[in-house]
Length: 253
Ligand code: KIV
Image: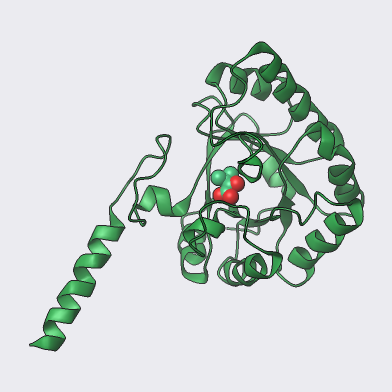
């Protein structure tokens, strides 16, 4: 397989495609081997890798370490680095500086940031600098406190209209795609139909162009249950616990 470009991702509009998060060298290699076209080094690493409660605490330095590991493990897929909380909100200068670190030092091919209309200038500034951007609207976990918790977004008419306006602003700014997180399927369908860039859904029904899931959730790699929208294809936590117990028994014997 060849190296996936931004145009390749745009060309996936209207085709069902799967994408995943990754946070280390080994899982990146594995995902890449299955021809998944886009790997997101999500700031969900804050929980999956660093054990924080939300995505709010994870820092640029913590994200950069894992962006480097994932790009080293990836030969084909487009690696998108998620910009952590307050690495882009304060100013356009901060946005460009930090996205540049992920591209130049981390080897990422694109970045993702949360927010719509109010992030228009930041998104456009990145695109103007030659930094490809993936947008993210609906449930934006970095606004956990502002949203009073993780809730489905866009259930009211005003809420839905705001998300549509945000999605349109992201397309106008020049993003190559957009994540729609935890919005009603009818709204995701309308946005998917109205945009020319691919939508990538998570907890937003089956009609988006692509889907994204957290690696640990579909693998069953964590002790806790995954969110409702994540289908668990295995129970690796239990399988690995079994292996550690067997090893321990063998050594004791
Ligand atoms: O950080 C993350 O993993 C994400 C995806 C769930 C879209 O933003």
